[in-house]
Image (cartoon, rainbow, N blue to C red; front, top):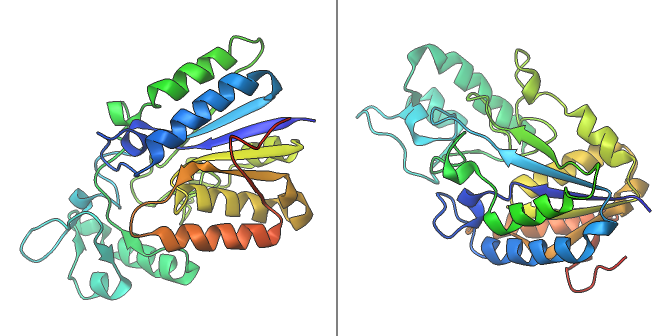
Amino acid sequence: MKVSLLIVDPQNDFCHPNGALFVPGANEDMQRLSKWIQKYHQKLDEIHVTLDSHRLFDVAHPIFWKNDKGENPAPFTLISVDMVKNAEWVPTVPALTKRMIDYVETLEKNGRYPLCIWPPHCLIGSWGHGIVTELYTALMEWEKIPPAMVNYVAKGSNPYTEHYSAIKADVPDSADDSTQLNTKLIADLMKADMIVIAGEASSHCVANTIRDIANEFGDDSLVKKFVYLEDCCSPVPMFEQFETDFIAEMKGRGMQISNTNNLFF
């Protein structure tokens, strides 16, 4: 049986208590996952790790927007289509106004998430962008069995679109291949007999990544390959319902639910 482990955004900014966008429970999630990898590393054929990779100037960071007083929005502000059209929030770069109206309109049509402003996080090259130490150590131990190599998948460097899912940006940019469908990751996962899922946050990046993979598989009988480690994923506070809805949806499509105590090979 070919087993793939997919770890979504196990980075300091999400998983360390000092992180810019710390998800409560994520540090314990990664500790459990690290021990599980060390225990069963010989059973894992592939490990894929996604990495949120942002710039400071990003559509979902405060510096991108301002109001008529020149103030940037506070983290966790939701920006709607009407707010942008009515100039309650406008891009700090005026030339982007039309593009951003089109952007928030597309987000609304997609019906996945409204535009949410987050604390600047996972800035490329920063401490917060790095993988939490305990998990990184476990990954390096796994790589000592040649020819094992972790597949690192960067997402989010395009400043004009959100990129929760590792499969594609929320609004793909036709001028930027990194925002388009990640066909290679889908093809790699398609070959697995079991896809073990862990990471942060279950309300956002995990949820969208798994939904998109399932949709691209195009056959819900293949969703039975998914094994969600519920003790290795946590939601962003105030967005717990997103996690609940995601798990209910994917269970209905065939995803299995397990944890590090019960998943054996």
